[in-house]
Image 1 (cartoon, one colour):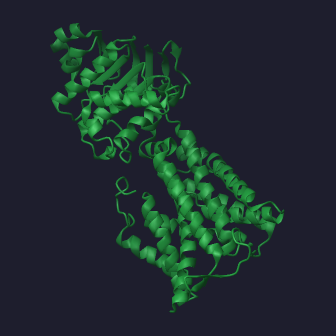
Image 2: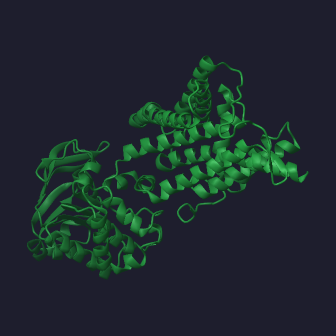
Image 3: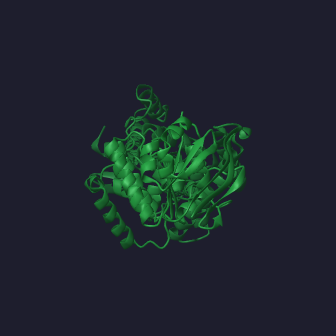
Length: 235
Length: 298
């Protein structure tokens, strides 16, 4: 579903990614772990075309994404949940949920309503807070909202940038469970995380990013068995 | 002051306040989504007033004129963004830095002013009333007031209501809030941010257009009239902290009333007092009357 081949990217004069390759097929849960500043956020921004790679290519659903505007990619199912959740503070929970879905072509009002009810069932706290401004939610509630908002966009691929940030462990588990369900339903999930062991325990495949390069990759279970090596790359 | 005087001043204050509010709402919406202002907003108002006069002079019926002028102004807003703002953003620092749009939009205002002068001349023109047959006062609650002023108030209320509906009830309005919060995050939700930016400038100019159409019959119309409206629109938007539509509405009405009464008390410095009042307010509360509360207060 998503293939990153030999991608390098820079921000201004500074090179952030050097020859990164990875793949996430339909229904696969892929995690990219790395320390602060390893280039995880830049990798996701490059995949969703917020940042144009200086070399290499990214394909989504078999198509080269070069030159496709990021909002168009989002509308065709490449959904990226950025760091910090980015819930619009002035809009209500329900309006935030609608924001993404209302840009997807071919989604009828009834379908969206139904999907919203499913998300409310998944995260009941969102139903209780449906009319409250997004800015007044707690961090955990905002993250649930961000995930639900992404699900409503009917993703074929879902990119997540450190959803665990600032959340209590049981909330992180709840979020990861939701992501696993997405993958099992056929979505290609790419989860970027600092919490290595937690992500490795739930993902299928894993990549370790260090200073803009992939230094280790393989089945998540294998990397998990090699905890000391993984940890050594995360410092 | 007699009751009749009081009522007349209130009605004309409300009418002018309504026009300042609409002008300021235009500034507000563009600023909300892009952090840019149109320093030619008043000149857009002026051109709308002159166009209305010209088209009516051709014998075109009033409703058609109004729709045409508002649409033309919408296009002008689109052009403003394309020609005077977007290229600067693309150039970044080579374009003169973050605030060069102040010069280019103000420059656009000067160009419009001079073109208007070439076409229509410098002298003031008086527009026939839009909504009432003759511009004669009618009895209203025991005082003589101009029906045109009442109509301006009524139409403005409708426009403000429509504006609120658009901003808080429609998908586009909500998308504007998403863009205002974080353009990158908005893109990831599938929102075409560039189109939204064009939309807000078109809307802002349409509001200037409506202001111009409405202002025509209650003020004198001439090519240099714009700057005053830009300044007053900015003052009103500043009262609302540029981010709170309800506070802008309040500020506009208050400004109009203050101007009307201060002109009655002192015709020489009448226009100055409300502006001094706003200055004093901003010294005490630099973020406007609503303070930092932009999300909660609607």
